[in-house]
Image 1 (cartoon, helix red, strand yellow):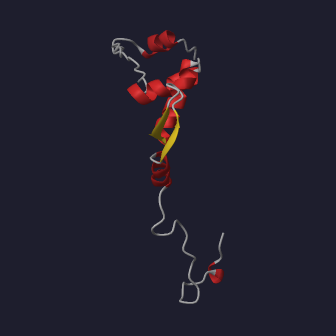
Image 2: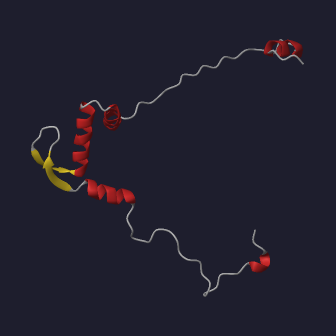
Image 3: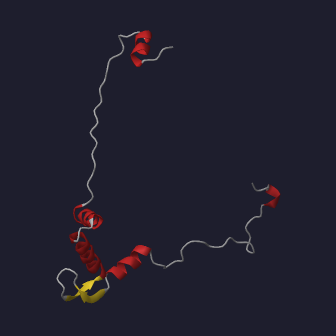
Length: 115
């Protein structure tokens, strides 16, 4: 814990260093999108023909190829990307029981508490 006699006020000589990302620097997602859009002429892993495709297309085709070879994780990733991840729904039901006609002793007995 800092002692008050050690604390210094900010002056023109004593300024904290500026932290954080510099202005104008790109987000990681911007850089990733740029490289995913870069086109390259490669062999299509499904058709076997040379085609010009984006990196994103090539990775998707490679994932499809893995799924067709039996990779369950690749299949799940494709299904989630194409159709969205399944939503798990939990059905809840509330039951109201009227305990107003019971005495305190009867409620304790019902709950199984022996006090």
